[in-house]
Length: 236
Image (cartoon, rainbow, N blue to C red):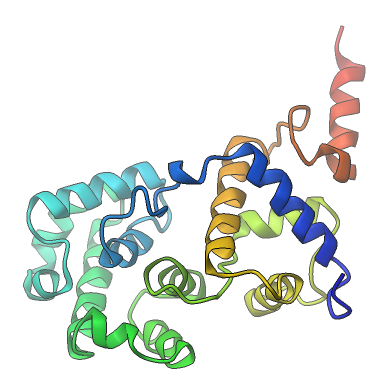
């Protein structure tokens, strides 16, 4: 167990439990399904405030139009981009963000030149792009650029909050540091899989109203056991 992170053993145990249950190849950014690094950037923008199914339909529309690359998107009118991504919701906002990101990539000399930057500089460059926040930037760093950063989202915070674990601080940086300190020897692949498993688990079982009885983490989750007992007691 890490001396700096008393929850390290739990973080590792949760990973092992989820790894036994979920199929990483079903994840939309697994090597089996990811087509190109720029898909991660566009997808991370399009999935904001919508489902991945809608984001994927928008990606397909961009791809069919030959527009799923930074050079093309940077030159397209926002109105045309909005038409193509309408299915993902807030098309005007997302069109503006996609074109701004594409132009930033082109100004950097293309995706290869951008991804050649050291991790800290690359993250700063991503965060400077319109519509890119910490979570989106880390999705790009992790899945597209292959950098060892842990992507934190609301699902991770909800899951570990229910397990009674987490950092002292509540902000994104505190959670990210907490996970990374708990997994000092984990490589990029583990970080990718762990984030994917958390999202899969949150969508399937650890929902806003969780489905606790079949949860592989139930033995570790006091809240889940209370819920399961309450449901059992209320059953006729």
